Image 1: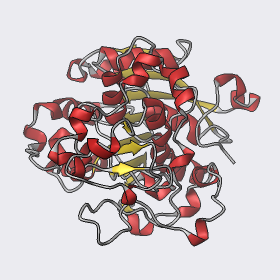
Image 2: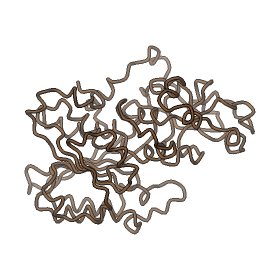
Image 3: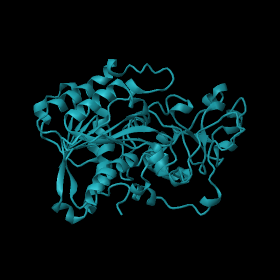
Image 4: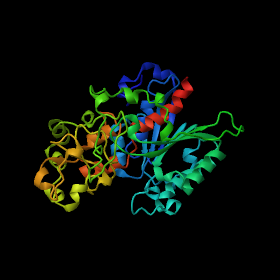
Length: 403
């Protein structure tokens, strides 16, 4: 059974050389989450392996992370605005396209404008749709990720029309890491698109929603975590106290506890250095605010965290992500006086970037450049895809072909 994340290239099976190398174009590549998911999804596939990857990303910080984690032998970064790409550069150059365009035009959070195609940040994706329409040799597979609000938008309808016109069939997913037993609430919309092997038969798209997730396809994603001895007798998590004046998200059954991902102070200091480790501490000036009692606090025995966003560590609000309590094992047991600093001074910290990478399914070997500031690390993770969830989506396509 394939591991959750791909091992270093030196451990890739030798028989991989006999498989077809898939050329990949990663639009809006970020820090490489889509590529990691693909590598993990087909690591032991009998037919395919990952070949040359082209990452298209305008952010210099993202590209520094990408280049630090992927070999230049089979990778290249194009630091350009996607709108400037010409069709000649991409037509017939890839077997797989991955897309994770900006989510802000479709986000449903409070105060969001939801301007969709009228948002300037949608121009890059609009250009990708235009290029796909013009291709004479389109990719065989396209994998797409965005926020839940993308589904049902006018841009979603336009995208579906482009796919249908080019002869694709596809599946749509609404998935959260909690469906893979990971203690993080992050519902996202996914599409797995494939050129129809039998065009002209009028096959309709297939949709899979959270109520009908094919758990048999989860494979290594569920096997990768060891079971807790007392799981059967203790399914609680943050938010199980129905009388709490500070309700929180509730974990579905089977979600694993945070202790599987939380690192020791010694490990964090070794990895981050003393100064960066100190930045994790939530200061008393924050805890003393009246609104601090309404933040999301979790401990090692909790099974859910709020969605971590690019504002984590910069904006203190439960909608930007949960905070970790060092002394109390469950968030429901955290006392919430008017002045939280009077009780919890020195006991609350941010989740470290490498802990978040683990929750997001990144392999342990993944590293940020040592000189990268903490706020940039948090921002990049918050903007990334969840590797484990994307791997599941990709496995549902590639391993069906192997059967």
